[in-house]
Image (cartoon, helix red, strand yellow):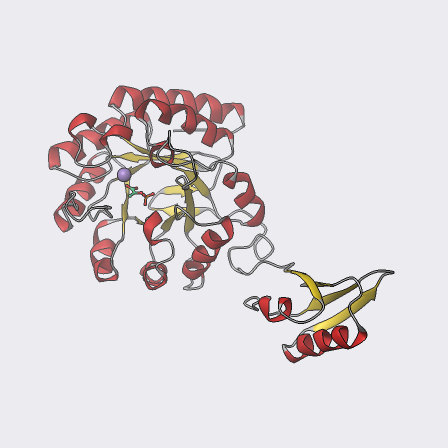
Length: 338
Ligand code: PEP
Ligand code: MN
């Protein structure tokens, strides 16, 4: 931590700041220039609240130097994490595509989706059985019945399964029916749920909260990693901004930034990110070009009658074309898509 004192801060003020830092367990290195004194505070306190120092008399500003997260940091683990989801590795050379409907709606719908996305090269079937809907009157998902349908459809077509965990009470159901649990944007800071996801032993797909900073997102990953679960994959799915012409603003700049700070794989969800069917493809291309380790794409056999997120769900031929184009982008940057 670096403490910059006010121009003209008095000796008594400087001494008081040093004493407070010492009281909190920091070693302090002092350097005084012609105008200002700067204090370098060295310690191991990741969770130290720098406001304890900011509010002292004579302090101009305080900067943290080390990250507040530990297990998620590149400085803790240099080599990239490869998350293992059944027989699929996320974070290697292959760009992994997860695709399927927003919600599991029927046996017919999930089987048709699994068949189409597997044929096009997706490796993981997505679909919600417990849905986080903004309105309590909207379709909430088929529950366990949906999980069973999705498991069967995925097994028939050689896909792994990812689905959202909304409630700690559903942990056992997840353990029985899925290969990876998704923590949705609305639950990114549901800390008890993050702990349960960490304890499940399944890989976790952690979506970025819609108003979460990158640091907050990595702190949420830290909750899962701290439960001794190393299989965490981050998913950028768009954040809320002032823009109204798109559902969200897909923050692709998060991809290289997270990769510099963390060893965890990052995937991009352009479906929720932009929320407009005919604009998902260019953002999927851009996600791969930005260095994403995978994509999550919503598709539906008949999007116009989907029970959730139809307007952002692709028709099967559109998904085929998306796969064709992202394969070209992947190859251009030395990666591949199945
Ligand atoms: C979803 O994947 O269908 C979903 C609800 O996503 P998010 O949590 O990103 O809104
Ligand atoms: Mn959705």
